[in-house]
Image 1 (tube, rainbow, N blue to C red):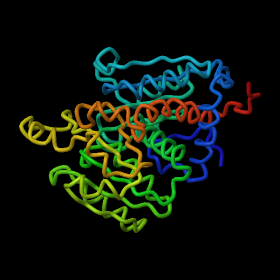
Image 2 (cartoon, helix red, strand yellow):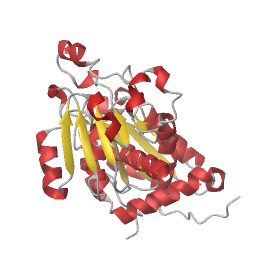
Image 3 (cartoon, rainbow, N blue to C red):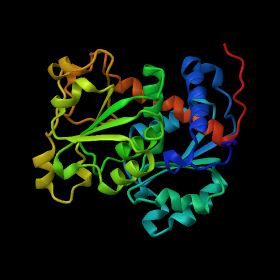
Length: 314
């Protein structure tokens, strides 16, 4: 099934074979970026960022610009008609006339889904509250695939804020569809993975799940360690944030017990949960992970737009 004209709201909107199509194209773009420099000539990306972003917004903009397209939109809702009370439905209807594809980030869960119901162009969810972040998930999947050669039979430890972390919710849901996936959930009791999500994964996929508050206990057993920051913006009580913010700090010394081929990943931004002395360790791939986000977003937009990706390689 063609991806042209489709929306991406949840990472499971696409089949595994459709994800492979995206990853195969992203691999080509990563290996030979310049050959794809004109495939989106005349195309416009609309960016609707109702919530702050650095990597997601700039990587989308970079992705479209690197394919020869253009970008318009806002990174601060207060500078748009939203501040006057304009609805999401009206905003997306108007933007459908201005752009060819749109990415939306919103603090409210379900906002991009609502936008897709009124849009005449593909809508990409750039993150909605604590719900989903599908293009970060595509980035994460591509990173694991490029380093491990496969997405099957991976044991992944998620560490930090598993309650509010939308990157965790998206990735664990997506990885559950691959055979042999096992998950180790490392968090304080207050920030555990929501019970409804855990129950759904066990019911649908019967994946292996182990919960602990002790990272050192499990670090030697995993293929991927996915670190997350404790998100201050998701807390209503600053005292709770201050009490939990330093729950897990990964240092070079803690890596001594891990496998030589383990990957340390992080969706960024980090605060202090990964010490800077880890950056030079060969297992630390979070900056390459951010780079791969450009290529997966290039591939995604090209396929949603239906442009010709059969280029002559340089």
